[in-house]
Length: 162
Ligand code: MG
Image (cartoon, rainbow, N blue to C red; front, top):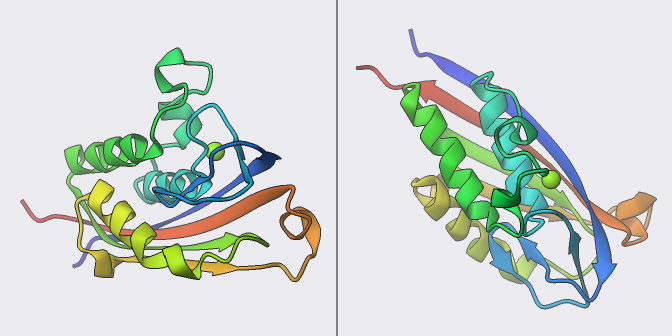
């Protein structure tokens, strides 16, 4: 029997004028960026939660508390890499990851493949196992008002036969 498990993740970060915008492991030139303890990469945080959820290992706040100075301003790709290492220790490999970014502006299409590559690289998998999608919310809600960005993610992992 194939030992598949799936997980779901969701995260929201506040956008503020004059901050760095790092999303999906890629720095994007824009007038606003994320207010956060880490680099604020809301896509990576949602993916970390999906992976941790699939393995029933809690959530990102449990493993990387935002009260810890160690994680202040940290590159979220490091967190993602560590999550994958936790899964590996328990015998899991990544099947695939998919996420949807809800953001009104800027247009993310030019950055999608770069994000997929950066995420795949941090997870140690091929790019074709990683999907990144982006949508506006037609100006509705906090994403539409550009007050924040939300990302949902799903991940499938499987137990590697030893
Ligand atoms: Mg977060």
